[in-house]
Length: 375
Image: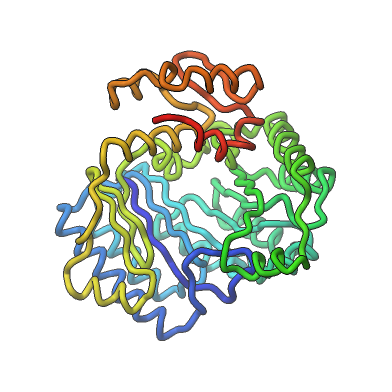
């Protein structure tokens, strides 16, 4: 089983962010830690201390959790869940809140063995536009400090397709990132999410994103460059050196069971999906009621088939056609014969070793492809 823990606190809301987060407040953190410990205890009892293969603290900004909260929560996690000795344990951090060597060293002592730094850009102008709380110098310093205290598995997050950005600028960013030698890189195209300040600015005509052609070149040529430098593309937005693929995220794409704790966290266990309330007060009330996981949705066979296709086609491995037939009783290629032929002719998919895979150009238009496929 995979375990995800959502930490909703941030110093400020970035212009592009649509994730569930709230301003950092010590009283709210105190209440959060108390409720999260209780939620861990609930699921530890209900699932009889299940074996956990990966742990992921995401947010929000997990690195805003003060040391006393870590000292309370990390041992509770170990008491309630049977952590595999080789568990991958990821902790997200913003560079501005990862500049304390003692704090980073404490994460290692608690068992965290993978650090995910939200760099997003190494351009101060871009960081200011995005509303990030750090500058490029802090990002580089946080990375160096994490190395110094002993982190041997570090992932860096970047965003491409920013207003005014050109392919050459993006490739220069990647060259600097590669020289830092992280084990993993996540490179996301800027998405305009409804209800964000960025969406308002784009709608008002004050912000113009690069054209489709420019964005396409950024994506394809950026991915090619990273692979030339030894970073295997294993998912639409993710690249890793050999042996450093994110096991937690890969578990999602493989359809593994996962338990989510914290406000807005989603879980899928034995074909049942449920989501915690988004607001902290409502989440706290749910945990206190002892009704966590109630009111979930039982996934239908059609939903499971659709998710199997959508998740598998995000990955470089692609969709295993035999597994699809075993799960659904249908032949995916025959069901989509005309579309598959057209996609192959246009270099958007390839068929090999019993898998249907999207090419890099196919990844670029994956949403359109998925909308047209029959599951």
